[in-house]
Image (cartoon, rainbow, N blue to C red; front, side):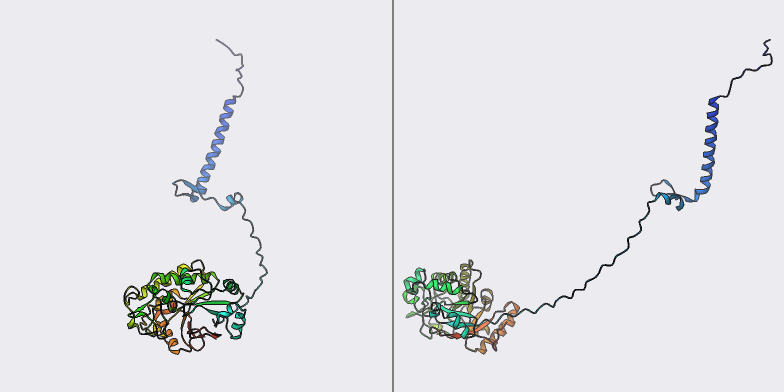
Length: 370
């Protein structure tokens, strides 16, 4: 029998055992804390839209983790400066257009500006194609040369161009269009005809036919040459067929040169051709003459209409002087056509002879009718 003789063997403390005991104690502490947290935070547990559990911690636990909101900067009130706007001045109305008819001699003798001032006007008007058919300038048109209508004075065109460049001087060139005593006499293929020859009006003046293309081309060429000379406005007088007030229309031969069914069409063709010829001179205005009867709604048998005037005219001239019937007729026509027909209308002096210094009068009590 083996005897230990009163001694037991000594093995020492196991390290593994100590580690296990530490882990057990740690787990026990964690368990106790978890149980405590469960009971303390169970009212703050919620499930969000993502299906996961979330804990709504007390504010004192998360305050230190949130960024501090900076204090707002003090608001500084700027120094306000009150500026009182200046009242907008009323626009100064333009003076009424007041043309003064001058003789052709004023084109070259230096009297044009003085003549306008003495008459109290603000524009000079020259008869650049008169009712006889003669031109107040040197033309390059074959028709004008062959008919003897062109002027022949050396340096005339240069003088006209220089006058038209005068600062502050507005110039108007009158063109007696189809009322022309000279050209039909030299070339009656362009003329309105009667059974016994060229048709003549009450003053025994011949007329060109607006229906003939060659006639329209000649007058269109005259307008373009005047624009090239620098006139501000071209006034187309007698710019249609003769009206009932001009003569006995029953003597007109109906045919290739006169057709009562197409009068307006031929007149509009002429207006359209002149407008196209002046496309290179957009600053040049076109004005037209019209009878008082046209404004009162009558068919004056000229081929003109208020609608054509509205479309092509910058301003309108009616026979005068002091034609109160024309003023009333114009007012009535304007009312019928509406605000789209705001043409100024002027009465004109007669042009049977070359004019002396003559002022034009606005229709209607000295005021432009608008």
